[in-house]
Image 1 (tube, rainbow, N blue to C red):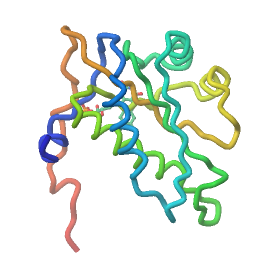
Image 2 (cartoon, helix red, strand yellow):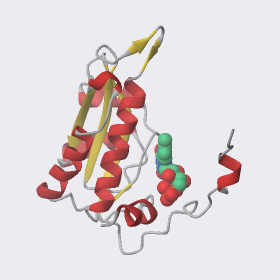
Image 3 (cartoon, helix red, strand yellow):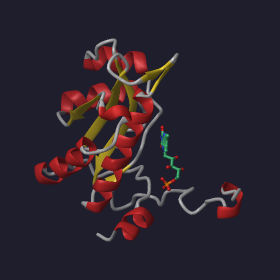
Image 4 (cartoon, helix red, strand yellow):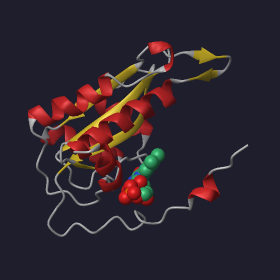
Length: 168
Ligand SMILES: Cc1cc2nc3c(=O)[nH]c(=O)nc-3n(C[C@H](O)[C@H](O)[C@H](O)COP(=O)(O)O)c2cc1C
């Protein structure tokens, strides 16, 4: 896909048909995450791929937002490895860049997706046995939208450029 089409055609999917992502496409998506930039190139990232029925059940305990996707990526930052500036650690920024790369590559591969922040961190940690230093930043449910999937309600509601940009 042309890059311009990828960024214009991506939209959040909130009803999947349950099919998991084929290995070759998933590998391409994960590779896009692998090559993303991170602060000082530390790559303080851990990605859990959840596809088994038991694993997906665990995700459902932690979030109402799997939307029946057959594959879920749990994108995490390692706060012990990440670059720090005083109190501030870039693990979350790094994980968001990795997740954005993967979301756009998913769209490029024809894989529907959504970014999910709404999850219970404590439950997710317990269910997936996530170690303390690894912080889950977002979920990326991936797959194919259901035939009756509604359009993403806010997709076309964007501010005008002059509301976001100021030239100095
Ligand atoms: C940081 C972030 C967190 C989000 N969390 C959720 C979520 O927990 N549940 C959900 O249904 N959508 C979530 N979304 C999707 C947004 O609601 C969606 O991107 C926005 O409404 C614009 O719609 P579009 O993605 O179709 O363009 C999240 C998106 C971002 C970027």
